[in-house]
Length: 218
Image 1 (cartoon, rainbow, N blue to C red):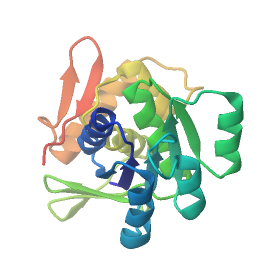
Image 2: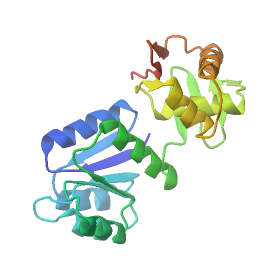
Image 3: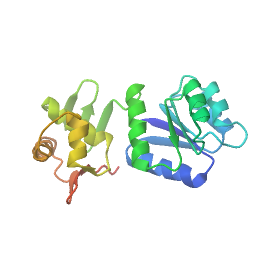
Image 4: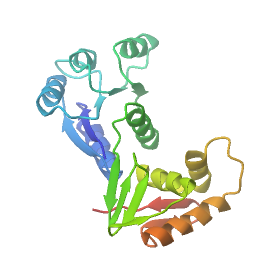
């Protein structure tokens, strides 16, 4: 889980971002102008990432990023000109996404930035299962469970994409790598092992004709 500040003056977009970030396990905080964003970061401090609109009333995003230099930022904006993108990157943003955007792409970019900045969640706990991403250890009801390296890779992908259905091909890409050559049946076999070892028969859902989803409802 990561604490993510959303600074976006369009309430519908802000609410949509908050809803989807919550769905995949993050903790969003919503503000609707640049001054409020600066106040939130300076007052609350420990945000892992800021999703920052550029065109906001009062203080715009370019001004905001100058005042929060230690916090990772993804610009989300309708300003698609090369000059604006270069300006954003020059000011230190970690990514630049142009509206309109696909929500799945945005969530993937959020995870990529969190991994790069080493601020993504390092522990995951749900339904008696405790996963330490740093130590790569797993326990169920307090008892350590041994996973193979590849089982752990797949488990981490499922956790980072919780509540999102992923195809077998996509899971192969994310957990085995772009260069992996193998049948998607490999994913099915590893899913069955995770279900058995973690007691997650009802948590790792099979999505008909697609793949799988780790269903996390708190």
